[in-house]
Image (cartoon, rainbow, N blue to C red; front, side, top):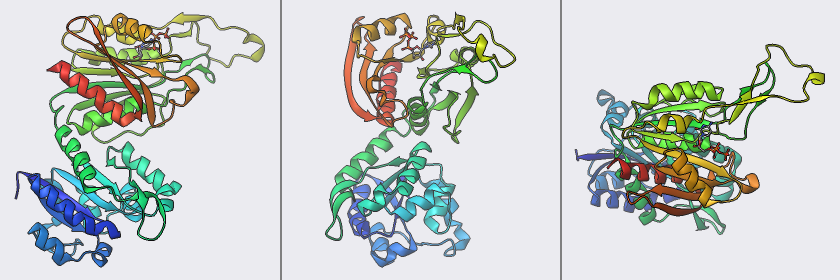
Length: 396
Ligand code: CTP
């Protein structure tokens, strides 16, 4: 046993032979590696190779070494899992919670951060079924790498190639370095868009999908934080390991945030909160003849209200602007007593519902100045980690 144990899962693709090198690099990095091949992967690289390279016994089904209850034991001792190569079939089986060999049983029993490294023919990778399985896994907190572009086993060229070992090791290192850096930290995240009901049928709402806040909640959980997500009107699912509180209106969101703020270390206010609500709610459907105007009343500014009396909390706010007005972003950073503000360029409406984003991270400095970091089209998951890195810096 090593101080840091890893399960290396091998799927049944030709890239399995490249994972022999990956295994060596993981050992060089100080990890104790137990290899779990799928039974079909043994067509490409046999058990003897894995046993010789890892110096450990290798089994593929739950029917070997039954006395050890290997799937539960390995799930408990392994600090990380890395699945390389992950075939389309293996990705589908993990996404759907199948447990039909030792590897999928172990993953199902494991709570450890998991890196999935796909390798397959480009049309299989681009297939909607595979892409939807990958999204499902990412939504559940798995890190799924993008495969490389290049020549495949046959003569075809495209996106689906197993990434270079150095890129896999770098991604894995990033995951392991961040695995517990937020341990003991309480992170409160808001996400989604509030709805202000006009009558039982109609509401004032907005386009927010909740994806950015969801990405922050997932990243914080992966990094060991205790996470509460106050989620408004989002179809995104509850995630194991995250306390999810569902709300509808700005008032409800205010109540949930207000009661939790004093106990949190970091708040990420990514929800799109309606600035106003109908002055009067009608219990019955308003007939169209009476719907010529709606009188509005202002909602509380949630983050500005709770953050003005902050103690040591790090406050992350967002601003969605259709033109990247940095001075307006800086004004909002100060007005909301925030430490960090992501000024989101939502022009072209490509950001709402997308997995990617762009804008500027504004961070207040001890010198009273504000640092600007331009962010050009990155995934919402990557932005989540960047914002949490900044928050961690502020927490000291
Ligand atoms: N916010 C909030 N409560 C509100 C409105 C906004 O807590 N009632 C938070 C948002 O979650 C975000 C930040 O304030 O973190 C900025 O939101 P934004 O809509 O860009 O700013 P507003 O203050 O509403 O200004 P405007 O709509 O005039 O741009």
